[in-house]
Amino acid sequence: MSLVGNWSYPTAIKFGAGRIKELAEACAQAGIKKPLLVTDKGLASLPVTQSTLDIMEAAGLGRGMFSEVDPNPNEKNLEAGVAAYNEGGHDGVIAFGGGSGLDLGKMVAFMAGQTRPLWDFEDIGDWWTRADADAIAPIIAVPTTAGTGSEVGRASVITDSVTHAKKIIFHPKVLPTVVICDPELTVGMPKFITAGTGLDAFAHCVEAFSSPHYHPMSQGIALEGMRLVKDYLPRAYADGTDIEARAQMMSAAAMGATGFQKGLGAIHAMSHPIGAVFNTHHGTTNAVCMPEVLKFNASAIADRFDQAAAYLGIDGGFDGFRAYVDELNDSMGIPRKLAELGVTEASIPELVKGAIIDPSCGGNPVELTEANLTELFKAAL
Image (cartoon, rainbow, N blue to C red):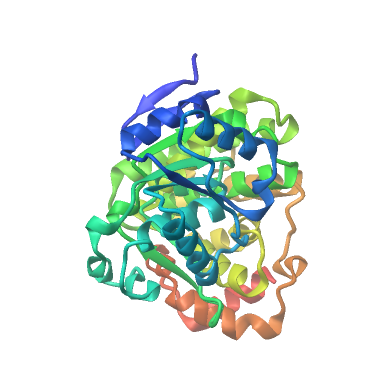
């Protein structure tokens, strides 16, 4: 089977090895003539980024780049990115990289033409309608990891550097116009990033499947996304040059982010404040939180995971699925407890407050309160 395709769900996606060469065509499709490539500090000097800039330059698109992006991007990074965009006279953004580069790149395109401050557009009620939709620049998304799925998302997670809270900024037009999913761009990922990002995709699928909200399309996507991770993440981890495994994981990442339109839950409600306070890797933090959250939600999700386990070829129903999660984490060197990521018991009250206000709370199958979140953090510590 050829792992190449042109998809239009949820946006236009050019999928397949080597398709980064079609970047100029994607820019033309989006109406971009002078893009700003936005990526993170770690990627900026790597060959994968420099070769992409070469493709841009050869097509007459320049080689404008902004890379002052932290692993958990904040409003200061965004302010600098918007300044670079406007000063350079750019007319669109190529969001390039993992979750941080993708999220900040999307926000640069969103905020470059706005007159209101960023936090006015937080994902609360209909605050997104405050934005001038006509001022949002077109976006091309090029993921270089297989995890967040931000390339097919209508929102970005930005950390408030003052309060250390992660906030979600949403607008329908933040969905990239064209996505290039080229698994060759992920070949150079080190093992710990392959594991962390892959388990992020898995967490998205698990939480979407767990969510009590009605969305059968997302439910089906989440289930198949879990299967792809189960079958291909160990292969990608063992051999980073396995293009089939890299491609299937890139699909799983996009599926996880599409699936979680159904909702996320306690895994993300916990990991967002942990990442904001302790600057931990998001996907790795999700993986550490998952076993305790599965146990916490057991009364509400055991039956559906009995069915999922059968589809995934896991014996023992829900309990077998939980055991599989522990085994998968262990096989990739994921810490067993949050304390190994530097989380302290003294920080739990602050983390609980961050979790309570996180939009992810609403997708958890068991209601999250300060009391039970406190116990959940303690159990995961």
